[in-house]
Length: 440
Ligand SMILES: Cc1ncc(COP(=O)(O)O)c(C=O)c1O
Image 1 (tube, rainbow, N blue to C red):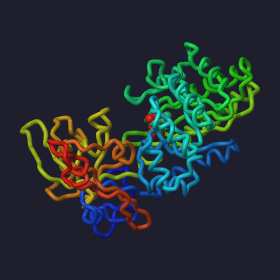
Image 2: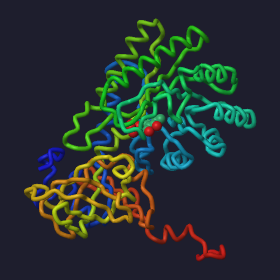
Image 3: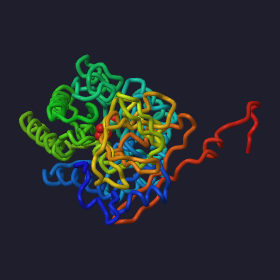
Image 4: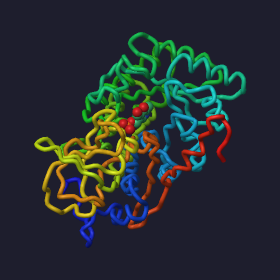
């Protein structure tokens, strides 16, 4: 059996269970593809992060990076757990508000926030705006003058750290579209500008070095750089940093061979580094904020698919096609992300072959798993891909005019539909006739 599955996840029928629910019954009830979240795992991870801070007695915020997966129920769950959220668009802001999430606990990120989005953020009283570039400082200045409002801001800086991860998900290196560069003096110039803004309250410094990072060194280096910067800004500009936001990026286990540290261990190291460095530089320890996305929702997600066609290429390989693919999980095609799958209707059956798990989309690159050892399968079997909770549904598309799957939360043997499967009429509703007239 796949070592990522616990013994107690197999029920009397020999099926995989998720959060105490039979995966085959879930596939039956909600149809496939369906994304199922074991919400107890989400709660435990948020709590584990909060506990490290509590044990270390530092001021903190655990801001869930909602780009990893966002819907109404998810924002409500984070709110129940007293978390903050990181939002990056009007859509995420509106959805969080719709879920009853307090605007004060939102941090607004992004490298090209539009005027409309910034207006919305100001109107709803967003807690913190992470300024990313000079264009945004000027835009926010104009909007604050016009509205007579105020905003709490932090500056996102690129610390010049290349985290050891896929090139597309590195963000802290100098050659990046995000943030104010430290080495060239951009970050200092940004600070000086913001300090002159009577309507902006400068609360601190932010850096996010990348995603799916396994090594401690990047976080240690970034934390040291941020503290050094805070100390220098205190000395040179008399500015006292109140919040040090170190971003997210804590790596998770996707395949059995992955051996990441527990996400909270990364955070413990960050806290120790910040505490020691601030002590030695003789500045107060600021509040430490983190923005984990993947580590909160990734391991909690299971994608259930129905097995369909099979193609055996003599002497080369067999393709097993499922009823989803790059439209509901683009990560393998986008950055060669690896996953593992189990046969949900018989996870204990002996492995018989290695197949390539392909999707149903019209791209040769629509492959979910390059090589997966599986028992003998037949059409109608249910395949569960593990650890699909982050950046799958949130990056889903309607490619080939396929609809996006349903999302179901499960806990203690109960399942709740939290996002319904799209229907074709959802897509049709957006369209007009060739002459521009409505079809409705
Ligand atoms: C600013 C910022 N914070 C947090 C995150 C979350 O990263 P992860 O999901 O790897 O924890 C991202 C991801 O891209 C980000 O850009």
